[in-house]
Amino acid sequence: MHKSLSASLVALACLISGSALAQYVYPAKGQSAEQQKKDEYECHSWAVGQTGVDPTKPAAPAPAPAPAPTGGRVRGAAVGATVAAITDNDVGKGAAAGAVGGAAAQRGQRRQQAAAQQQQATAQTQGNSAAYNQARAACLSGRGYSVK
Image 1 (cartoon, helix red, strand yellow):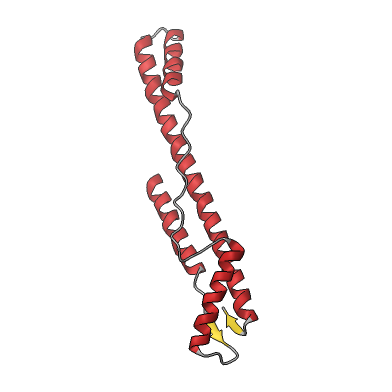
Image 2 (spheres, helix red, strand yellow):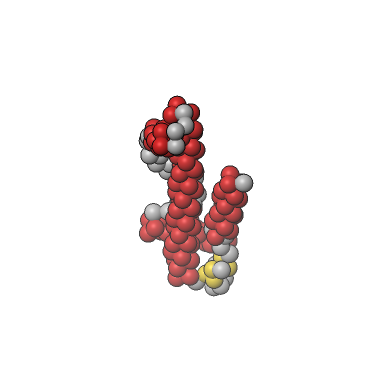
């Protein structure tokens, strides 16, 4: 379920960021199609220069997840062995059970870190797209176009 939720969030982010790039430009002062094409190109270049964002280039991949804390199995084994010794149970079995539990906890931490990084990257991409769109719209409005 956790994987499908993450995949759904990524898909939603892609749809939102893709729709955020859609702008409609109307030549409010009767500019020709050729002039509009030239102005849109120049405003695109200007917006890229202002924001550092170029929506015509593929987005940079999300950063790799940070390495998870090491020693989950070792700590788990130590805790399991200690609990087994205190309760007069088999220390070896307690250590093995603790190691499994420690490894599972470590995997859970890695998943949470990866999800948090993905959400942060998505938010940054959306913010960058909005900044580019504002810059492009400002340029085109200054040249006599209606931008929505």
